[in-house]
Length: 58
Image 1 (cartoon, helix red, strand yellow):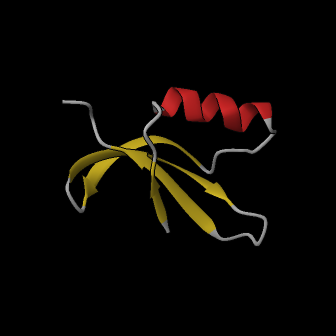
Image 2 (spheres, one colour):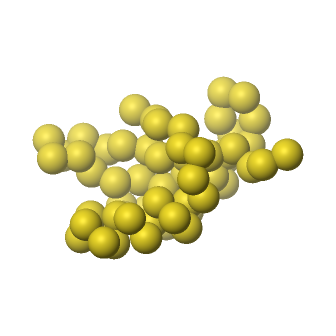
């Protein structure tokens, strides 16, 4: 599951660190449904992998 976030991934990563949520993978650029995205991955409480991504600002 992927959630598109409005915040920068640096802001999202800071929030994850504040709540002691470890990142599975560091920021990674890939192709999303609407073009290039940058993503990070975390596990939810049910141990399911979640993608948090944003599109570059235009």
